[in-house]
Image (cartoon, rainbow, N blue to C red):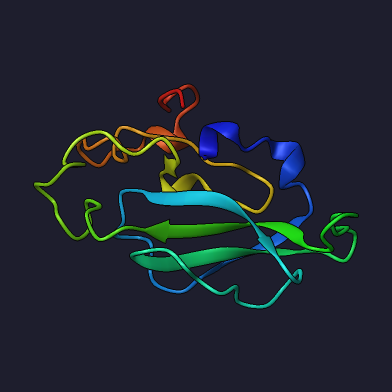
Length: 133
C-alpha cells in the first residue's frame, strides 16, 4: 500500500513505464511486488489491469533469501472510478491509491483533491496543495 511504501524502498528506481495514458486517470493503485528481475514487464495476477511498473537501476540488489527484486506495479480494479464513475470510489480512494501526476521514479506519490474525487485542480503543483495519505 502506498501509505506503507517508504521512499527508501524505491530509491533504486530509474524510470516508470506506463502501459496506457494515465493523464485521464484520477488515481492508480500501487504496490511493491517481488519480481525476478529489475527491468522487464512483470507478470500480472490480479483482477483488473496493470497500467504501469517501475524499472530499477543496476545498483538495486535482490533479496538474499528469495533472489527477487521489490518493484512497484501500478494497477486498477474493475470497480475503480475509471470504469465505474458512480461506483464505490465516486469519491475517496483506496488506501494504496495515488494521483499518477504526482509519481516519479523514487517518489511514492500523493493523494490530491482530484484523486479523492474532487474537481481537477492544480493542487499537486502548488506547495502544500496535496492531501495527506
